[in-house]
Image (tube, rainbow over all chains, first blue to last red; front, top):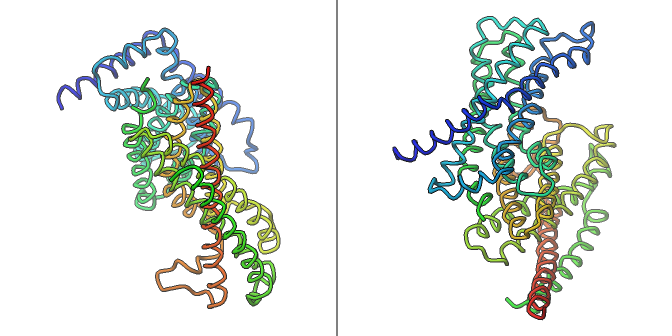
Amino acid sequence: MNTYLRQVWVIVWKDLVLEMRSRERIASMGAFAVLAGVLFNFSIDTTSTRPQDVAAGLIWMTLIFGGLLGVGRTFHLEAQDGALQGVLMSPTPKDALFLAKTAANFVLLYVVSLLVLGVFGLFFGLDLGPNLGWVVLVLGVGALGFVALVTLFAAVSTGTNMGETLLPVLVFPLLVPMVIYGVGTTTRLINGRPFDEVEGNVRMLGAFALAAVAAGAVLFRYVVED
Amino acid sequence: MSTAGMRRGGTALTLLGLLGLITLYWMAFFWVPTEVNQGVVQRIFYIHVPAAWTSFLAIGFAALASGMYLWLRDERLDRAALCAIEGGLVFATLVLTTGPLWGKIAWGTYWTWEPRLTLTLLLWFIFIGYFMVRNATEDPEKGKRFAAVVAIVGAIDIPFIHLSVVWFRSLHPEPVVARPDGPTLPGDMLLTLLFGVLVFTVLFFGLFLFRYAVEGLRAEADLRARSAA
């Protein structure tokens, strides 16, 4: 078990160092998120809609589109120079590889989520008050389910000749529970409702994330085998 | 079962299903009494509900076959999953056509984000994704594995989608059969519905066997062409 965790950690570390040096994905996701916030600002009429009613939906949609942009390219760099073959040929179990990729993607997306929350909070003048901690938690749980599903299907779409264009078709139908529970919960929290009211939804979001991680860990080996 | 046996079985089941379908239409149009509140339009229910049942049966069946394919790598299991998904797509399309037709008269609108209609629409897209992945690889073996993963993850996700869309909003008529306190549907309506479910299930398996036999022949022809080359 100890070696298993070390193998996971080595790959997570490798991916994060690579990202820290190239800043390829985090920069595109971050820039996308901020610019989407700017565009959304012009897409809603604040005289007829209260920003705090639509902010949660916009935050989650930004995460999904931005996340697809970055997480969808998980295997892109490695597949390009054949490094993925090397990782796959190493004695690391495939589920450890999946968990490591998911964990590294989670760190990236969570950083972007917090950036989105901060920027949208600023742009739309949101006052979260005591619910800030809960919103940060809910974004984390949702991001975990998202990266698990998208990492699995990124491996699928990288292996096809349609590439990333296939990814939304595959994952959007599957992401519906995350959007519904995530947006429903966040909207209530932004409007100052107590956490007790949304606890059931957060649990469902957690169950969704766990199911996505477990399914990915089991099925990933069949996607990358050659 | 041999391919010829499969074809005979498929023919028999499909004929039986078609005969049942004629009876079902007769029952739904002439035999069963008109529902008091909704009127004649309610009769679409005897087609709509069995079609919905069949499309969910199809994804379950396909996910099971896909899981076993990934485990055993028997080509027949992959063919079974493919044929089940094709059948499921047909019946899901039926649900998505009959639902809005009924909705226009009963709710006054063709489309509404009603949970079960939404769920069927998403299921329909999962079926489409299955075919897109399958046909987007150069190596057919890889496409089969990818498609199997789509079917399995889709089937696992369906309970979550169901719970979430129900939580989101519900306008659909409440269940009238699968209730904890027993069905509330009057006897002859229940009989027509259950008969419809039976007919659609038989028809599904009939079409399934047919398609399965065709896929078997195609694989055989491929093998012959390859050994001749």
